[in-house]
Image (cartoon, rainbow, N blue to C red):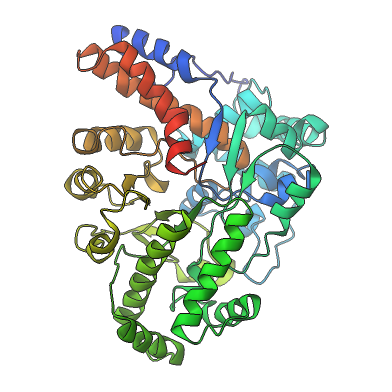
Amino acid sequence: MKTAPRPLHLHEDRLFPADAAQRAIARRLYAEVARLPIVSPHGHTDPGWWAGDACFANATELLLVPDHYVFRMLYSQGIDLDALGLPRADGSRAEVDPREAWRLFARNFHLFRGTPSSLWLNHVFHEVFGLRLRLDAGSADHYYDAITDALQTDAFRPRALFDRFGIEVIATTEGPLDPLAHHQAIRDSGWNGRVVTAYRPDEVVDPEHEAFSGALERFGAITGEDVHDWDGYLRAHRQRRAFFKSMGATSTDHGHETALTANLSRAEAKALFAKILQGRFSAQEAALFRGQVLTEMAAMSLDDGLVMQLHPGCLRNHNPRLFARYGRNVGADLPLRTDYVHALKPLLDRFGNEPDFRLVLFTLDESTYARELAPMAGHYPCLFLGPAWWFHDSVEGMWRFREQTLSAAGFYNTVGFNDDTRAFLSIPARHDVARRVDCAVLSRLVAEHRIDEDEAVEVARDLAYRLPKQAYRL
């Protein structure tokens, strides 16, 4: 017996407080920020989308295959990733009908109830594609056809969606070996959409990265520097940073397992680098090398003005079977306890008091919010707190972030919101969630007479728009 179709409805008061007085305040605050332009200063969308402006293939390729939040949940329930059509590490893919993969997703969409993914996806379905039935087994084909057909029209090409979403600027993230051809093509096209890059040098910084040796050789070939010499290695980074900056970059990004930094002498750094190149290093020496390079990156940021981002505290590729079959970014990464107070001290001893240096800190360890991160950002001129990230990019996570950082860091030692996503169509949804949650937080402060409503309006606007532009020098 078929289940009757169920409507998909986005309540206008979603995520606002249940208390009527606070809810009314939140509504007024949200009305001030709902239509502000989107500033997306950090993320992992594909610049090739805007360079080529080609139609997206189908619902599965756009909304399911790239989204590790989605296939991570499905895998946790025993669903084979091959059945979803995920590309494998060797470049192959199982022969899967994208419609069948979508049907499998639709049959299991109930798994996402209450999660951020359901908020984001239902926003996409309702607001971007105009769908008014809930996604389930019965509506799977209707969804697949409606989305796939829409994607073949000019209104759903990447540049048209960029404009429709009200994106003022978006930053992608590229490795040090990337020629940035897509960014150059965007420039050459004459399109006025602003897409900038960010410098992410992990593959030539982490000796334990599986691509390190080969990447280092290519790094030298690209820059013409002797990257087997410590000074030449640093010059190569400076050269690539300058190139990225010439292509619009205003930031760098560093994803390390810990926040460890070091301040070695030049002789000590050269000796450590020699051990790294010989491949005769311990795990502790690999961590020390990463820490020393972070401090060198800070020195370079002080010179070239690029904002430095640090995303530590993640144990990558925890599931070796998935890593071997599908490679990185398949959702098998897990949060770690992370120290910041001791780990960052060598870097801060050198640069913590420099007002022209800017370091944006993220964490997957929420226990550090009130104990370490907020007090540090509330003291050092160079430190700013990035928003709730990855596993904590949720309604509850955003509330915890504000509640635990507000007293020591305030609002203005944070950088507003960044979506940090590969899922292009989720960007307006993610920013809408962040704006709603911040308005809900501010409505409580107003209701408790801790700030006046006109102040809350200013803070809401700053969090949604001004702070990310200012923090990332956009």
